[in-house]
Image (cartoon, rainbow, N blue to C red):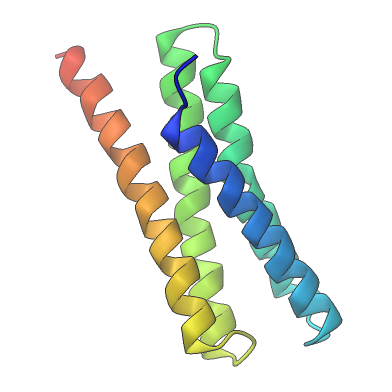
Length: 118
């Protein structure tokens, strides 16, 4: 079976998010914003998985749309955690790059699906 790039990247991103969450709780004693980041950041991959197992193309697109929204939210929390000095600019840059890459891939899949149905 061919490797699904969005599936692989969103899972790897979720692992990173869990580690950032652990770091924020253990080192920075930050529990509220980090929980928001954990929820949205791991939800991207979970929704990708649900999309792949979707019952129809409409279901696939709907779950993909949720994954896109979760990625946007994750982008927000990363920026907020940086501006409030919980994450360094270096940590921020790498996480934002990964988030933006996921957004581009998901957006591209959505665009392709829309084009195939017009």
